[in-house]
Length: 590
Image (cartoon, rainbow, N blue to C red; front, side, top):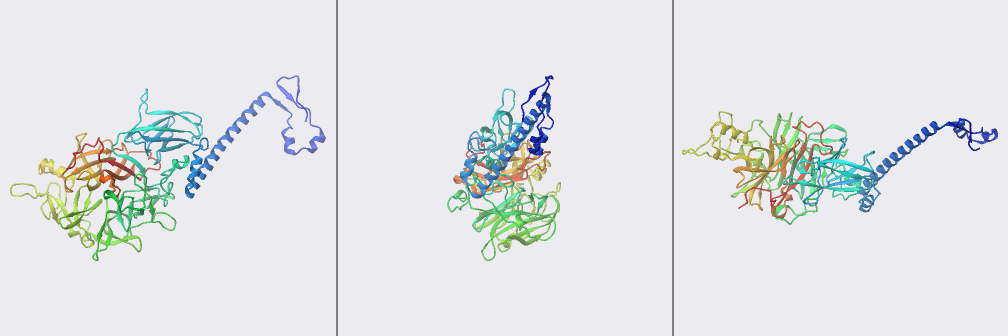
């Protein structure tokens, strides 16, 4: 091929024609490339720009390919248990991700559920290790500002009042951010749902559980009940979401996990399970498709919810797992209530007894056992322990065996404006356990106070926030005796407590299960989100009850949130509370 030669027109360059014999030997594509034997400077510039665009596209495709390969390799490493492979991913320059880890400034532990938001509103949320794997095309290899926000935690303001930081974002690089914890309790990890350790896997960090991405196809779960049974910890949840359709199942989901190394506050006799500070290894009951299957085998339509889960002896003395059930048409309309019993053969709950829907002492929420004299009872905390029954299967299924802790006249029910209170001849209000009598709730006590039927000193359930000095109305929670505080303690979520409708968690103490429950202190806030049906995991207590663990349902339900939190929405989150925390202002135990 001959060299380019100049022509009189300085804006053009030409080629001599290709000799005919050469054309005959050249492939047609090559011949086509040089058939237009003149090119302008503008054409050359345009072609150069096109080459640059093609180069950029190749770079993006190469980056994406690296991401896919790295992600697939990381996932295979998890499946095969190849920690060395994960370490290789984390090597300098080997990962396409910029790893941002957000930690608690006090403990150094990663904080889940922290939002990192760019100036152009890209929102990322830390996983259960406090990690975000950032790989946004167009924002790599430069300085990027991230707003940092998480309910109950705080990032320092800069000179302009912005709570955030600018980071040099580079593939394979990393940064650690420290948050000040405002909550007294410490957020630990997400228990259920998809992508619990997604970002940690992508950047090659160690993973504490065997199913870090998706377990039994579960995307979301509502409200937990747990009990120790047959040498394992059994877990049950309400409505459960799946990837393949917006409606999962509504028949109660179930799983088991190994007992923790130290079984609760007494220590010793533990199992092979993880330290609850690290995580929970859930093994779900699944159907043939691998999705969590319904566990409540009560016939009939409707959502089937369980609560009051407890282990009690049957007529032979064998310990059986039983629960109160509600077959619901809507969130507040029941079609049927009663009791179910767990079948070891079918691994489902079978109908034990159906109750009248107007029974005033129906048990609900979290159950606990307590011995009074020579008699064992099961108490049901909603969150106050209004109702109890003897701790055996025969009594549990009989609605007439239940007692209510109430000031109402024996045999009566609460009717607003017509309530009859039992008083002694000297007008002293008689709070006691009474058969065939309805209990009164905290809002109903307020109605009696407002009506002048109760004096403030006669109230058993009247929470006041010890810091804000305003009333607190409890929604649901757990009650247990705590040997470290030497008192009965309650963990509950509050209704209409500022700043959320149903997202504030409180801690309270009393001398007895029946109270009086008068003061409470906020330990967790979810500013605009809901966090309800709080469950204290008694088996996880450590250091003689000084360290306790609890979880709740994190969801946008009952809020005006338009965009839910990705992956965290409608799932369970674990918290830990140190009862020796210097900011806990409850009176010392006796």
